[in-house]
Amino acid sequence: MSDYPPTLAPNGSALPAEALAPNVPHTFTEEELGEYREQDRYLPIANVSRIMKNAVPESAKIAKDAKECVQECVSEFISFITSEAAEKCQMEKRKTIGGEDILYAMMSLGFENYAETLKIHLAKLRQHQSVALVASRATNEADDGGLGDGMGAGGSEGGDAPGM
Image (cartoon, rainbow, N blue to C red; front, side, top):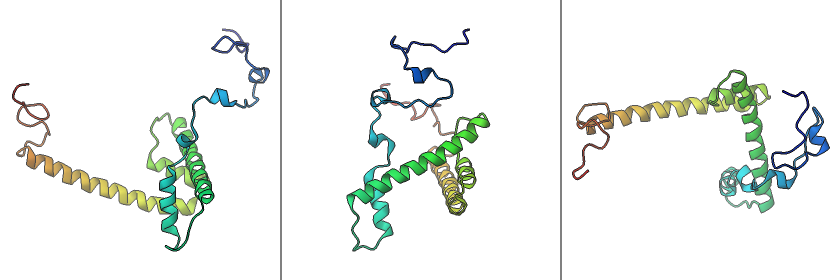
């Protein structure tokens, strides 16, 4: 294997000199970014607008540029926190970011006040999910006549339909 970096891009054209320099950040052109659309990077403006409206008096109006600014800031904040959580997962050789990873990231980045609130909401979410799971299992057992495996009497989901 060569100690020298490749001098040709995958498409066969020469790489720019700055791309060959070690430890020099490369600025990507619009063409290199491809079809990466702006709306794919941001939360939907309708969701941002709804949250903002809930935080102000009913008579208040919110300008379009204010909504767009908050949309961009919120999306950047989410990326910032997620990036820190992903780094922790990568160091621990895990592929899934969990709620605890987000809490860790918020604490390590100086958002302790928000992390405490998130911890409460995460506990409530988990409690709600466990109650829903128990209720779902109870419903499935009642529907299956107490078999409890979710497979029905025929051994396959949905049973044996006539004509199949």
